Image (cartoon, rainbow, N blue to C red; front, side, top):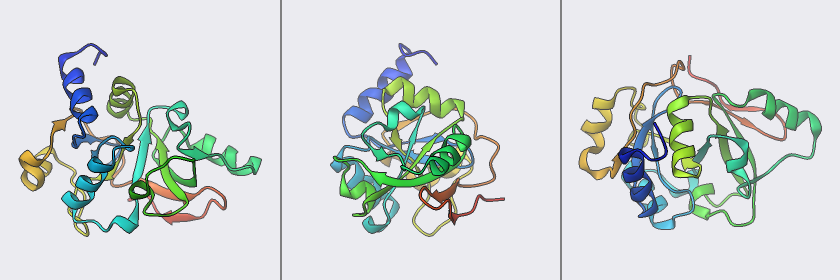
Length: 190
């Protein structure tokens, strides 16, 4: 989808206004918003019924979109492991940058980030000019939505925008790893 498409302009405008929407990720539908908009973050957390202490994931089209959000590990082998997995369905927990909202991190000094290889998300993030929050489309504690109709049934008109496209080839949410140690915090579904 081109940067000038009417759909993309509507989505970009709704995100800029604090809107929350859904989009297909590598394995499940995701809910997203502007990661720097406090009101949107609070609304998203409430919509899911999720505790604010859990923090959220940020998804990006490229490493350039993570500038200022996270600090790269100083250990060369840790950095190599991250770079080898991106773009791809591996989320890394890294030290936060200077101006990251506490609602995004759950009050921690770390943030979970992923550079995707999934084309619909790349198009969305590039088109709106920013990374987006990427939390699974579900009510807290319930299975993540793998079909658009499930998202519509659960969230309906409470969403401000929708981004089209198929899910990627993963069977569920992304693997999460700790950047310093490489330790798996959440295994890939499968």
